[in-house]
Length: 368
Image (cartoon, rainbow, N blue to C red; front, side, top):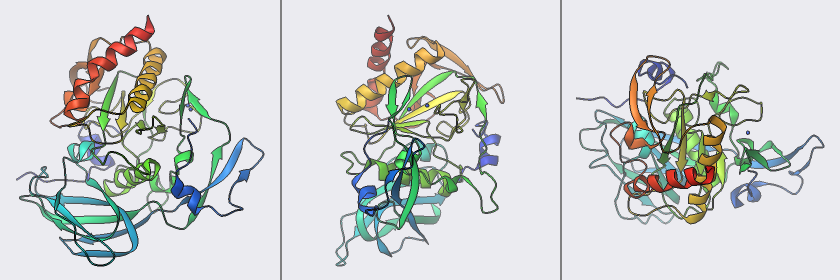
């Protein structure tokens, strides 16, 4: 029987997935609500102090029921024994003890395909019950609140940040807690490694559409990837929400160039197991198996990919032979690919996958 594992630094290297700047978008309501009247202000050095809620988390094992003292925004679920979510489910509970209907765990997106856990939006529930997937053992869960925790002050750039003219939210601007990248002994869990750019891979996060607080969702994905999956950081280089806001993902240093070092090499992230180094991953927030992205998200993705294609001087319509610079493993893929071009997964969703030709054509047309 296959064993579902949490892919850490050593596991990623063994799999050939080596561990492997700027938009200042408006901060979500959850961050503003957590800020006091004296918590923001220009520091005089090109940054301003913003207050973000510290993530609260409570771990549990088994199918439950589980209750927490804080409103549950998301539930992360991991298990052993199978790589499938079939048969698995979750039922949420409200503060009055009412139970919702059983909902499937879904396909879990990139995290599941890469050996990690499922992240499910819980809508501020008071508790939940789980059903383990068929054949699963060692069921574990983590209740997360990324909206209402105690305030944590972060220094955020005062002016909008851009990469090749495309605005994006820096890690600081969406409230990334950089402490999550480090182990208890203070060492970095997944030290940065940089390799020449080869390809772009598009993903979806396989989470709820019409997200009321996408920055909170990005923080939850970060917690799942960095800590629960033990990857040491968020798995994508960039994320795009339904309003067209772009978020900086994987940490790449403090030189102001997201996803790259000063020489233009790409930091290795954790989005396509075995094919990560030199492969730049962009995730659309939401699920696109039965619907496509919003126009703002589609436009933002096109602008971002266009900027990256120009930066690296590649043909967006080409097919290329990706060569893992660590172990030499090769894979023929489109220059702009979907996750399912690399491995068995539904990501980035059937509808979004069909839209990739449109994306390639739009990017190529803008280059002429």
